[in-house]
Amino acid sequence: MLKSKSAKITDLYIGERFDVAAAALFQELSRKKIKSIIDAGGAYINKKRISIAKTQLKSGDKIELFWEEIQKKQENSTEKEYSIKNTLGTSITQKTFIFENENFFVIDKPAGIASQSTLSSSKDTIFYALNAYDAKKYKIENMFLVHRLDKDTSGLMIIAKNKDAQKKFEDLFKEKNIEKTYDALVFFTPKKVDGKINFPIAKDSSRKNCYFAVTNPNSKIKDIKQAETFYNVEKVFGKNEVSLIQCKPKTGRTHQIRVHLSALGCPLLGDKTYSQNIHGHRYLQLALRHMLHASHLKFTLDGENFEFNATIPDDFRRIIKIVESIQ
Image 1 (cartoon, rainbow, N blue to C red):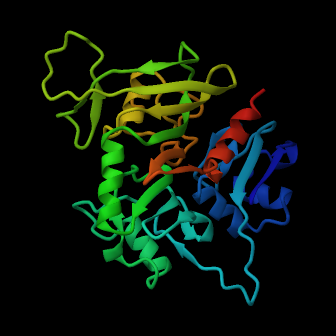
Image 2: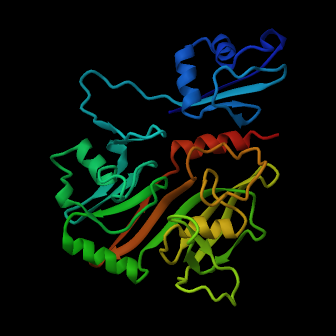
């Protein structure tokens, strides 16, 4: 459960440390708890995230704390949890699992864990996290990747339970017969409230594992890949400072939504790779990861229709709550 506290600093706390003043104002929170909230990115002064507990306060400052209150398990509870080793505090729980049958299962992948192995880490993946959660049920050799989500993208992910199902899903994705929808929190607001972004995408040779949108139709760049993303603006916050956008990619290029939104002038909050041109924005440090969430999947497999939804995660709700409070 997402919880929050806020207060306005009076003359009594001028020059005081943030953690000391917060502990005095919110007496149910210990300084240790407040320090953990600061470390998790949930502490703000005048809507700007702080990372140092001893930050001094001024008269009139508004301080805010946002944190996730984890309900204590009952003594006889059999509920399991596997904490993922990252800075986001995410974990695998019973709520991670959306659907399962004999051929595949669907999860709500937490942010902060990769879909597949990388050169630097062979075990920091969703398969190993699922296996750590329940080694008997989720054996590494019985899980087959059919599509990928970026490490810091949360949301719906399909995992096949056998090679036949894997092949069927690969064909569905290849033939564009799976409808995908993503929620995105972005800087600014597009000029049009809805539209199609169809810039081709090419690999950026100057930056490792990065891509860029080819916006010049007469470009001579080689090895470009066609890409198409439909979008519509769901909500605008403040003075067009932040927007919630729904995206429906029709192709599945690496980093496609992130690259396309950046080319539109509205990169994802928290996207350090594709928001390099954003300077001086008061919410530049608001997000701990790029704010993209796979919220909807729809497809037909073996004559049966499937449709799945995943609500936005807690960090989305925390940021929306902050930007909604803008005066």
